[in-house]
Length: 125
Image 1 (cartoon, rainbow, N blue to C red):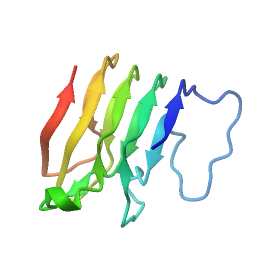
Image 2 (image 1 turned 90 degrees about the vertical axis):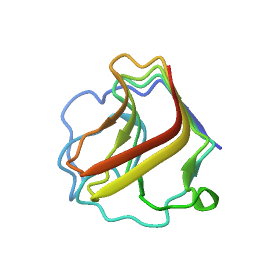
Image 3 (image 1 turned 120 degrees about the vertical axis):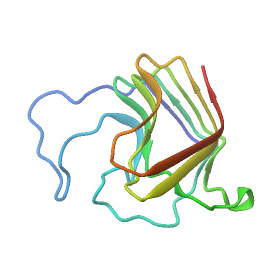
């Protein structure tokens, strides 16, 4: 359980880390780059509030995960430009049991090509 508030864009010249294609301004950015390979990620019970860009950017879960095995759930994202951002390029991904409030653009968005995204039990206000 963590809280991250008021994330702002970095100022000045930036030197990118190896393998990064661009700078991401997000309260949480976890394995959100399309080329990153991640596994066994657990992201539960966190709060992301007030980002100039992304609230939470991560690779959504693979389709077929059982509710008992849910590794991304119980998070609250609000007052960001974009709330919950999918970075999974798998053929099928899913997200559920999260809440997204009062985002300036989109509450939920997938920014990489994927065939299917299942959204269930998500509150978007």
